[in-house]
Structure formats: structure tokens, C-alpha cells
Length: 123
Image (cartoon, rainbow, N blue to C red):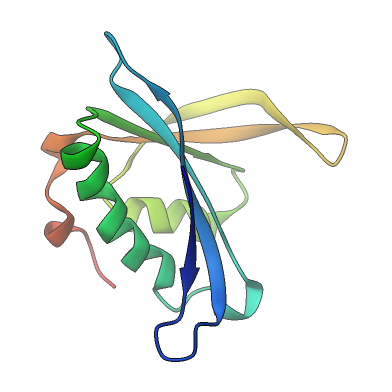
């Protein structure tokens, strides 16, 4: 379920957010992925998008667990996930092949009991 983020005043494309790998049955979970245009990064746009997406995932899609993974040296992405209430779970060794190289990723997850979107940390 891909979504694009546009700035409200001039409709400039800022980035994108995808809700994917939706698993029903016993898992009731999904994986989110996101990207942000370099000149728009660090301005709170993706956190604002997550403030909309997270309640939709729990309420609209009726899922129980949200997962996200990022490269361990991408501290900005890890900080974003922590601000959005995600918990770090551990290292996924050689998880994805990026530019021809298998890269480790840090796995994060968020559960409904981790708090409402309005109680997420910081801007």
C-alpha cells in the first residue's frame, strides 16, 4: 500500500511511505518502509506521516504488529522509529541486498500497547 507525501501549500513531493507484507491469520502484522527526499529530511515530515499511518494500521487495517528495518549506520532512520514509539529488537544479518552487497539491518517493531500516536516522543 504505497503512499506519497506532498507538502500541503505547494504540492511538492517530499517522500513516500509503504505499508506492505501484510500478514493475516495468527500474525496480524505488516512491514513499513519509507523514503524522504534529501532536502526535505530532518524536518518532521515522516514523523507526521507516521502519526497518521500508525493509527490507520491498528484501527483501519486491524493489525497488531508493525515492523520496520533499517541499515544500522542510518542513525536518522533509527531515531525516527524511536520517536514514533518503535522498539529495537535486534540485528538481521545480511537481510537485504543493496547495490550488489548483502547488508545487515536493525529490526524495530511497534505494538498497540506501546502507546497512542499522540504520545510519541518529540517532534
